[in-house]
Length: 217
Image 1 (spheres, one colour):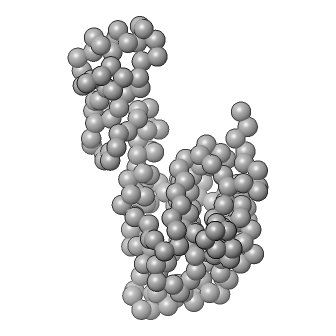
Image 2 (cartoon, one colour):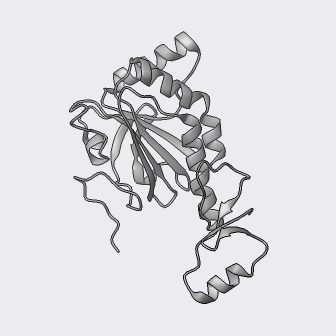
Image 3 (cartoon, one colour):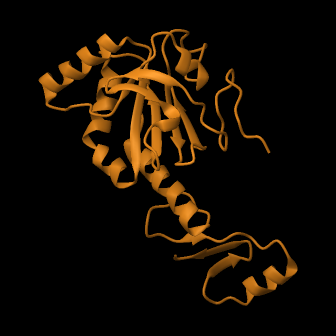
């Protein structure tokens, strides 16, 4: 099955993340070559020098080590010039001491924002909404979140979701509502009668229903 996403559509879950080249605050990047072997949290914000965006990127900067510990690189974007980005990064550093070390794409022509569906016309034609793309080391999109321009994201949830995606890949299980590391996981439901009989005979897992089996990994 071809999971390549047409350029005119935002990439969905399971699609290959579209490639692009862009100027960023750390230099020119080609996305296909960016952060090899790592996950990427690719997020957009509406504009530099704005209140919610400043709180968000400050939050990302303060907790960047937590993403690094999860083998994840941060990549930001807004429809601003590189000069605006540099001035904003420097202003925040001077005023608060917080430094945005991760790259921020200068997408003044909106090419990348359109490629990733970060422009939502009902919200704005000229500023990106708060989109978040979780992209795995094979450059597959694994999770997509959209927030409106007026509501900041929750970094605890972004980190939890990232950790959950990586845990599922490692252990081949499913995760229940509000799952946190160290809690029980869900086993796949039986798909044959033989699997059903094996599940019912398995005393090592909790199963209030045969299709709802919980255990620790």
